[in-house]
Image 1: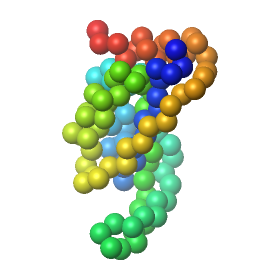
Image 2: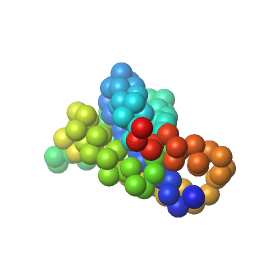
Image 3: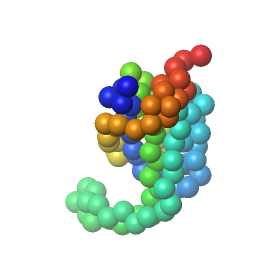
Length: 108
């Protein structure tokens, strides 16, 4: 079952927006859960300038079958022109937890 689970991540520059992105994805059942990391400093190049910003990282737990819907949902709701979107495969873990992720992302 582990190969069916992925962690998808994005970042955003406002804690309330991070909470909305996390809650909305869980409500839509495109993610079983989402973790919001504490604020951190991001340093990046954007349109020829080096920028710094305070951001919050949202890590979604979902299935590979629901990932396209989660990606589309985040793209639609995100305020960035080019939001971070990376996915990390889950290669192992508790079968009970992984089964829960599958159950919670199955459309009702």
